[in-house]
Image (tube, rainbow, N blue to C red; front, side, top):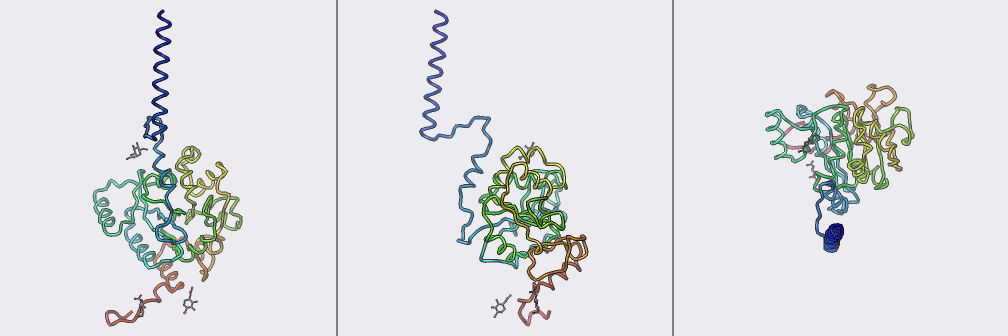
Length: 298
Ligand SMILES: *[C@@H]1O[C@H](CO)[C@@H](O)[C@H](O)[C@H]1NC(C)=O
Ligand SMILES: *[C@@H]1O[C@H](CO)[C@@H](O)[C@H](O)[C@H]1NC(C)=O
Ligand SMILES: *[C@@H]1O[C@H](CO)[C@@H](O)[C@H](O)[C@H]1NC(C)=O
């Protein structure tokens, strides 16, 4: 008798549970179990179109830098602010870890109010301790839109946006890993990895980094090398492209990764000093569109 009533209670409970599940499945009501990862947000983002203007594709460039590098950041705003291309929607953002210094907080707040080009991640500033991982893995959750491609760039690299965008246009939009293949003399993007000076991942790979356990368990070390290791371990990025010799280190700064400035340049890296930046700006005629005016005499 006692066993029968326990059986009855169990069956009724299961029945109620099954009806409950069917009800929610039919009406697509959001069932929030605590074990569910907050991935439904990024899933929706991934379903959205990656362009809003009718341009063929979109690109987010995140320049990983530090709050203290004011001069460099303002300079880069100028350098990228005067470049554009009809071939892609390009957004350039400066990427930091959490800011605790009260002065930096105010300055960054001013910059955000004026330029709205800053991303502050939940991490502590570091090299080789996972900032690049935090950058890519956070994006699907924190961005209001998705992009076809996401780039990670250094703050000592000069990127020519029209040339970058033209070289990306014919590339696949999926499963793409683009950049400057290392080691220096390698022309094979399928061995080694792309230099941290600036490399591009297609959105599906950014999404994969956010969700996969492979990067999550391998975040300490040289960050550009790690990205290559994750993609290899996950059997990802079947499409790879090295932009050599259009990407390189500034002449004389890094052995065989360096060569002379060339007209078809996509990116020049290791620009540490102002005289190097000036040389590059002059070589590429960056200020040639300036008109005569009575207001100045340059
Ligand atoms: C930031 O990261 C830390 C450590 O991973 C975590 O404990 C904390 O909840 C995170 N904060 C936010 C706002 O996501
Ligand atoms: C810069 O301008 C000079 C003079 O007009 C020209 O000869 C040179 O090819 C230009 N350089 C580039 C990289 O376009
Ligand atoms: C220079 O003048 C030309 C002709 O008036 C104009 O089309 C162009 O936009 C001006 N360039 C700049 C940078 O103001």
